Length: 393
Image (cartoon, helix red, strand yellow):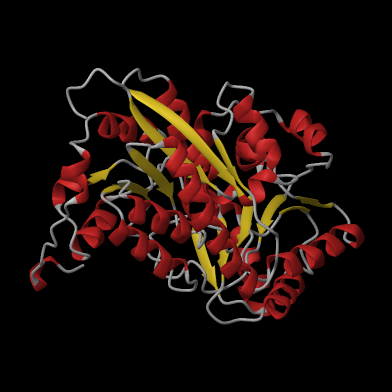
């Protein structure tokens, strides 16, 4: 409570590498603030190879998980439902033991619905990071907006995200524009020079280097068909291809199998399951381009003036900087987009570009707000605020 000398217990939950970097940045910042007592809850793919390496890196910094929530891995919509159920039960038990003052969640993974449901039933206030964003090509959109309504404190990346959270009826005092904390880890991580990075990931990085990440499109689209279009679209590209694994959405495993096969037969190609902030930031710093449908092309890449070919509908509606070229998920369109991406004049035109998702100092802003929150009773008692048509985006 505000004014109390007792440190406020902040639980931070992460279940996948997609939100881990942002969670880590907040945990690190909170660990250096005497007003807060951070507790890390890890689950899902963070407890299995290679995600456990990310957890081990936090353990080395003295931030071992206070709670672990495992569940059976799977690649179908039914498996996703089972994961939500496992998180609901596991989080209920974990929150009962930790008794946190606030639970912080990042992003739009479907498992977070289980965590938020458990917190709601137990009367634990929720803080949510990255509300108010739009991704029309995935069910992440519905998850994200649902988390906004279940949450009591909102940390958003930019002004238009703040206005969308307002449109969902949230009170102004609950919303803070902080930037996205996933940038904190990427921008602050020490970068390896090209040769050291090449040795670290076990792949030659002779230019040009394109980073490829392809995730399932969860609203329509067959994962096997779409990844084949991506592969065919890259057929004429002769440079280095660094592939990072798909996420844990249904269809992700089949995508990874196909991309692993590609890496075994295509020259100058490597497949990597999890690079971590240091290696990933080093890779973005030396890459010539990025392709696929990952949010990293929207969030992190602008900070490196890195050209991005965004393929398909997964990121539709999301705010982006001028480093992004959009193309449909069709082989010919992908080939044309990649050619434009690697034009030297395109990158030259990105001089002076700023990243709309922040400056790499979001976690400090988030921690400052968490340390000064009002009482639990004040947080839990929400008022719905109507907005006028004049306020619409």
